Length: 269
Image 1 (cartoon, rainbow, N blue to C red):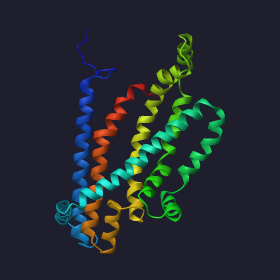
Image 2: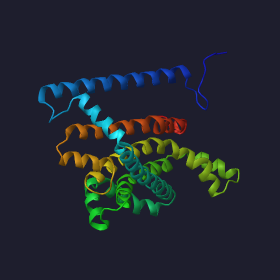
Image 3: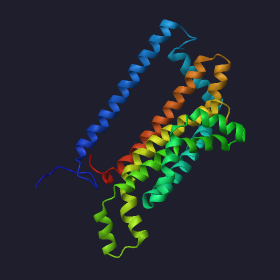
């Protein structure tokens, strides 16, 4: 009998999973180290206006943290990104499952999703500002319109790849339409949806910041816009570092475990 441990719900050895996590962490450390070295090299070559030093950027970030600006802006941007992402995920999942179940819905909705995916995010920012002005809901709407196509297409693709034999077996056991959806379709679609949600959240975060830069709400983007007006490169870089750090934290603590949790439902490639 083999003594190799396996992860719960899967056949992958725990040792291999741990090794991959260590490799990912080491890769992140090396990548960040190289970026910091390149950052300082650019500063030494071109000066403070083009690229502030690491110390100047850290000082700007510490100053904003002390006066509460950093936390307040991060919270506002996070709320904009999260609200828009949740709306996009819920709407995309519902429409994707509907399109997968009904051909007429797919015929109508797939071109719409393609069009939405092709519209540049900055165009949605301009249109939303013209339609609604700078209100708290504007960046949420922009994020939703930009990201909704990703979960929709993932849910649609997942619906199309459900094994028909599993559906027939569920019906043979007298599972109703809701039972087939709950026990067969949704678990299978989850394997396609989890990585799509991770990508959609990354897009949502970037679009929320961009919308704020262009005046569609207060938050990190507003801080970036003010730094540009004041030609304060150190503060601008501090905001950028905060944006990337928060995105990496959410991706590592929430999105990556979510993708792994539903990974065993993903069809083999």
